[in-house]
Image (tube, rainbow, N blue to C red):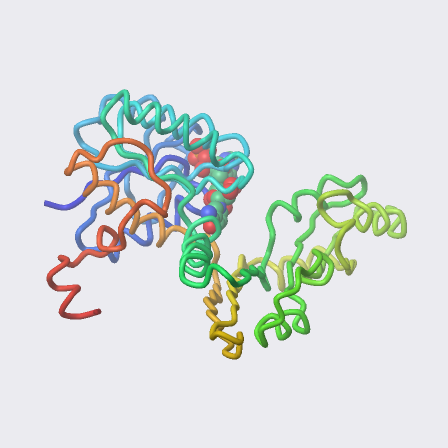
Length: 327
Ligand code: NDP
């Protein structure tokens, strides 16, 4: 029997999960659940769309719900709510609030005998695992994460809120010189400015003061003030033509010295180069949905992070096959 999956929220990740399920043969998609009028949602694979309330009548038809809403407003509410009736997986990525989110989902899962896996994706997610492996294996070392080159949707949104800005796209770019230093075993702590630069492509309203806009962006606290920031003003056509993709990626680098005289340098490097951030994140979510289903079958109820899910639960093959094939 296939693992029956539902999608809550039909944005970039929702569409990504729909696509990913189509090439995971042990899974099938039951439906998409949205807070919009379902009759306005045209899914790519003609899977039916339902209201969020409809889900309550489909508890026996769905093994795992993949929550694809936004981290800021949707997931803090939706993941604990859906965990009362379903096994759930989400990609909650507001790092500072993960412990609180985890606790709320854990309470809901334990009260209802479900499994939740939260903060699944690449960061948090696969990068978190690499940081953990690095620190576990080389505790005397130093871990550094570099993001990009990629589109930061949060920073793009922040620019769009500046008066006179019509649209914008922000790329986070790692600084090669610092990357090279870390790769070569330099264990110093680097500042935000030394690690990344921020490049912004901005479309302005007619008559807007570009100088003021540039200054407002570059001095914006938390978002740009701590970085070298480059602002390019472009036309709406150029933004549509050249900046519609959502690439991302990055590197987790762990370096340490071993040997009684610290004479041997050890470097662990884990790199992601993603053409489409949401399609990749969806792929990770689907693998963890398989894990949630299996953990629920074993009655391992409660919430888990990627740290607490053994790798063997992610793969469609049995552990015996995996030992033969991949060990
Ligand atoms: P989107 O903005 O595309 O979608 C979020 C929600 O907005 C959807 O679930 C949908 O809910 C609603 N929505 C989408 N399109 C429309 C529309 N045209 N009109 C009205 N509502 C719409 O976000 P993403 O899918 O790109 O990302 C979701 C979250 O995933 C992000 O907030 C981010 O935090 C997280 N993420 C995590 C990663 C990780 O590595 N851990 C990596 C990438 C993202 P509904 O259908 O109910 O209206």
